[in-house]
Image 1 (cartoon, rainbow, N blue to C red):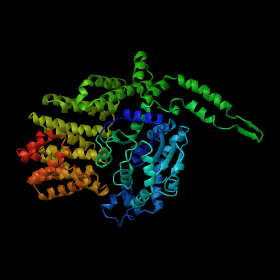
Image 2 (tube, rainbow, N blue to C red):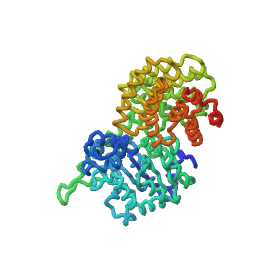
Image 3 (cartoon, rainbow, N blue to C red):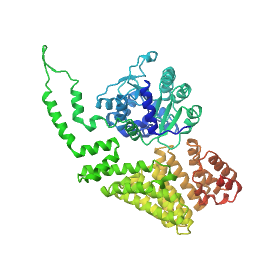
Image 4 (spheres, one colour):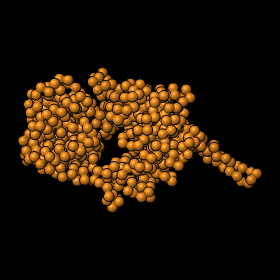
Length: 623
C-alpha cells in the first residue's frame, strides 16, 4: 500500500483536471464539526437527555445507536434537532476551501452525507453557484442529467422534504443508489473526507461497486488506516486505493488548496475588488421601461479608492502571506524591516510557529535530530515575539518529551522530561483550559515517574504532582473523557510505585463515582469505560477484593466489543488473578496484530510481574 501525502494528492488532482476528469468528493460529518454541527455521537447524547420518554422502548445498548434513537423520534422532532444546529452554524474553512477548489475546476461533483448548507453558503460567499441536487427526491434514472459542478445531498437537506436518519431509511436508500454510486466511482477519481464508513448502509455499496477504474483516496485523522478499510478497499485495491492521514478537515483542505496555488480566495485578500466584481453582474437600475441607469457608479468609485488604500496597509500584506502559507517570505520581510505593528508581529509569530511545526512533522519521529536545532529556534523566535503563544510552549514540551523517549540514557531522559514539564506548565499558564497541554502534563509526570523508577529514585513524587494537578483542574476537564482517562492512568501508576493508599484512595473513589455518572449519561465512550476498568484493577491490587476485578472485567469486556485490540488492561487483570493462559492469549493476540507498540512499559508494569519470567512473555519481548 502506497503512502501518499496531501502534496501528492494535490498532484493527482492537478493531473485529473488537466485530463478532463476532475475528482469527485464525498464529505461526511467530520467536515462540518468545526462549523458547530455535532457528530452523530454528540446528537445521541442530546437525544438521551431531551427525549427520555420517546426512548422508553429502547434497550440501554440501542440508546447509544444513532439510527435507532432517530427511529423513535417523529420527523418534526428530528428536523428541529438538526435544524437548530444548522441555523446556528458558522461557515468553516473546510467548505470555503472546497468551494475554491470547485471554482478552480479540481472537483466536479461533491456528494455529501450531511444535511447542512455550508457548502452552498461558502460558494455564495465566493460568488460561485454550483447546481444543487437532493437524491432523496431525485429521479435516479436521470442521474446522467446532473449539471456540473454540482453539490449532491445523499440523505437530504435540512430545508428539504425528506431527511434520512434511521437505519431502515438509509439502508433502503443505499440500495436505490447502487447504480448511481457505481457510475460515480468508475468514471472519476474519488476523495472521501470526514466520513468514517463505520457501520452504515453506504459503505458496503462502496465496497461492492468500486472496481479500481480510477484512484480512490480516503482521508482520516488517525495515523494508521482503520481496520474496515484495511480489510476491504485497501486490501483488495491497494494499488489504487490509498489512505492519507490529515489533521482536522479545515487544515486538510487549506493545505490542499495551498498546494494547488489557489488559496486564499480573493474575498479575504481584496474584499473591495471581490465586491466590485459581484456588482458587475448586477443590471442597471430601471428608472423607466426605456431608461436604465447605473445607480452604483458612486459606490463603485468609492470601493476602488478604498481598495487602493486597503492594499497599501502593511497588515494586509502580512495577513495575505500568512493565509497563503508563505511563511518564509513573511519572516524575511520582518527580519529586514522589524515592523513594530502589533498585528504584523502577531502574523510573524504565527509564521515562525507554522514553519517550525511543518519542519517538525516533515521527518519521522526517529529522525527529529536532523532538524532539531532549527525547529527549536523557530519556536523560540515565535515566542520571543508573542510569549502568549500557548501552542508553541506545548509543542516544545512535546518535542522534549519525544526526545526523552528516544534516548537510551535515563539521566538524559529525566532532564528532557523536566524540560517538557516546564514547557507544558507555561502553556497552561497562558491558556489554563487548553486540554492538550493539561493532558500532556499528566502524561509527562507519568513518564518522568517511570524514568525515576528505573533510576531507583522516588517516583511517587511525580505521580503525586500529577494527581494534585489533575484534581486542581477537575472543574475544567470534567467533560473531557480522554483527560479523565489520563488521570485514571496516573492514579494506577501512582499506586504501583508507592504505598500511599491514604492519599490515593479518596481520589480514586471520587473519580470512580464521577466516571460512573458519566457512563450512565454517555455510554460506550472508550475512554470512560477504559478508565473505570483501570481504576477497579487499581482497587483490586490495593485490597484483593474479587468484586473489584469483576467490575473491572465488566467494563473491559464492553471495551473489547467496541475495539477488539483495546485489551491490554484485560491482560493485566488476568495476570493479577493468575489466569495465565488467558493472559498469554491476550498479549499474543495484541503482539501478532502489531498493537503492543510500547513494549518498554511491559517491563515496569507491576501488574505483569507474575508473567515476566515465562518463556512466552520473553518471546513477545524479543520480537
